Length: 301
Image (cartoon, rainbow, N blue to C red):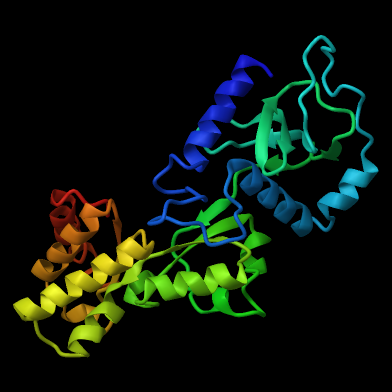
């Protein structure tokens, strides 16, 4: 493998592997993976590629059978051969780092990328000619509402997203979704899912569990209970919390309530996602003040 390939590989791993706070597929106990251990840049790349191929009307296995692998893979036979099970050959690589698209081969061994660029490889490796296609890491749908569908036998494969190259979805958006995070994630883990799942603690469901639909600020004890419920959800594996400030009951929350909850999320390194209060004539007034207040708490928003 060339030095450039090594640099690209390490960058992909950094952005899509365990070190990334946003895209890790193999999470810690607080940031777990909820699919069948898809866990790496390699597997994400492979799934995205299969999705693109399926959308184009042919499976990866079909193309693999129709392509004869070369004896060594690269012209320079002095290079040591990369041990690989699969080589995606000749594609346009968009690696997610912001670098310009370029022609490159990608080799995979098991569920890991082992080489990127120009290299010699094991002649027994299956080769897929992707010269007319793009190769990219799996995409992330940051605003998804497949909260219940991802737990159901008939829809948990999430095939409609996989066929678009999406390999990670974020649930719990707009303040709606499962409040018992541990139970929710166990249901996904127990049955398996076609994509990774990142869950946010939904503020609307959280508030309703304490205040119902009461149109008022919480008392000190009620706010404390809300904070403890949020803390429990974040400990169980949620990545942050969301609000639906245009919907009942999230719309009854004032800025001070959200800031207090944001402080809890900050302790966990969590993020904040919001459906803003107004999408009409007051659109430009509905977000900046709250966003600035949350940013002052050190919370990604």
